[in-house]
Image (cartoon, rainbow, N blue to C red; front, side, top):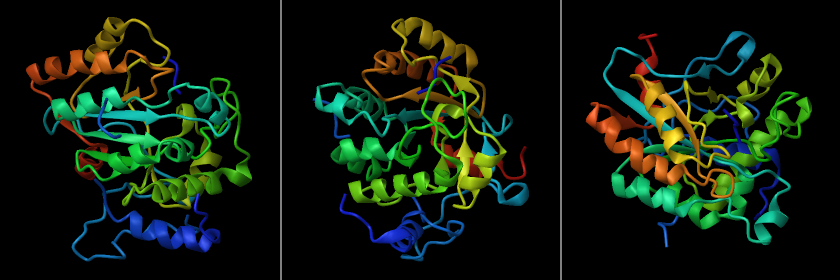
Length: 286
């Protein structure tokens, strides 16, 4: 959260399953590999691999913050499906870490979006994870398994040990596949948005692009939907990536915010796209 299984048999099985799954992408409506991810599909030649950015120095994961500013008024809405590894008892007691009404609103308004999902969230809500992963309006990407921070001093989150960073991301991909997400994207969002060189090197071994943002919605823990909507509308530029959340308990205003900002942005001439489209437009235009 940002303030402003049937068990696979070992790492090899995760690598094989993830290699096939990273080839491409597509909630129920309201009431790892040890080598870089493949750039070509391993299961069907008709499927196009999703775009990624080239790795940084020493194999570090590249960091994507926004798309080109000069290729038209596009904006990508992203939603973090947050749930830490130790929040199961809270969910069992009735706390809602999902937000089906938000997903239904996105569907009704025909807004494509990228969902950064923790493995723990997928374990808790497998039907919703599967529905999102199989809906071409959305793409599902990796937000770690545990939602523990990959650096120290990150909004009070517990910290993943450096030796466990890569396996935490692999475990999340395994959880997404287990829930029925057929093609989790080769994109990773650091919990809290916190990373350093060590973290980038750790996840870079998986061939992922780290996705940040240039517009902080401020929906986390917010109670004033109008203030959040204003922050989004004031921040969006061509090529922007907006970070929001789909967790009812910690971001209760987000569905109302979406209902407010979507028609206004469309009135301003913006077109909604998924992160993959912005990344695909980025090469040669930055």
